[in-house]
Length: 579
Image (cartoon, rainbow, N blue to C red; front, top):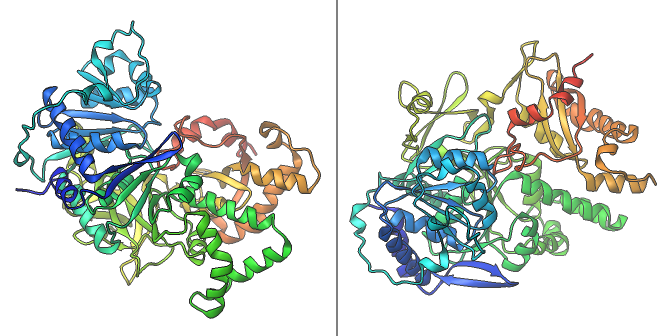
């Protein structure tokens, strides 16, 4: 028998049957689901799906936030021979409908009425749907013309079904999921991943970032994203660890304290926010506490002085984040080197990695005992990487996807003549095999003077400033580099109070001379001195509102969708180049 994700899971569930597999919060209390109960629910749902007529290769979509039903549905779909199509809950109704139509999904699992309404927005998109299974027991309009297709999660578990599944039908090379990339530069494409793709990556990552059945994962990145799916879902479930579902990013700090996780998968934006919160608390404390904290950061790790300040100062910060982190994995975008070093001083190790949906996803990751901040680590075993003459990162290995669903043209475009997968990312390998990613090939800015500028690196400098929440660098085919900047309104409010100035609404504030002067001063003294002459930011435009997923300006891992942002703020950009 070949290894498949369901086969391995059921063997793990047998071994750790009485350990907690999943935990979630309901009405203020955490409820647990053991490996045994989880396996039983997966078996039951698998049989239900077969009863619905699911055949090998049928596409079944999941549109939901992270919750136990997501995990159960994912593994049951695979066990039935179906192909899982996860949908980002932040996708617009139009994109969701286009994906459902493109993959011709047969069944849809959806968590609530709000998300269901996104689907019902376009009748054509659900013409292929035979069943819609709703997780929550919301009332459904009795006049709804799709009522005959809709059933609830509770209803499908009422009747017992016979076990008639032959696991030998599944092969490791069979497709198990089609993941539609969030698309920073265009429309989503459906990457086809096999059981072998995922399992090879789980095994490769486990060798350098080992976990045990005693680990507790806090899951908050969307399971519809490949990083959380592989590292925060399959990794723990295939090694007997426990997953606790967060209540969402707004409750992340609270959940950390409650759950006390040992491992978490995250994106740089989260660490930047935590970094800012910590410094806000320090800066609002007494001058004595500020002096002690800054002195503590200067102590050499491992020294006697460091051990003392670790107990007196850093331990309190770790406890506010649960106090048990062995490590945190960061991916999805570039992590600021200084932020990584800061958390390491606090005793929280952030292991930055690199990968893509098409590589299942991890290509490189820093090891627990061998890491270099500012890089994305060393190449994982079984995967080969070379750097082309154009500095593009090329990949081969068992984790490389099967191609884009119903899109041969795009599939052919992303492989070169020697069958290397062309990532579209530029980078280099140092003498010790650590990979550094410079930026996306398509996102490189070329000034009218012919200078190449990597926007993400400059944005890292900008976002590290305490007064800046978000930024996007522009300047392609322009005379100079400029930036759209979203202020950190909390920091600005503190600044205004210190100056005894009235704090107005955001739309008015971005136009006030005091705010404009503040940001220009930060730019000239803090940002531009760190940049080459051709990278220096000549002009800025302050924006009152953050870039958001709702406006389709951010991907699910909070990366900038630059073409959308440029479209939304075209007037602000043009105003910086009038003179």
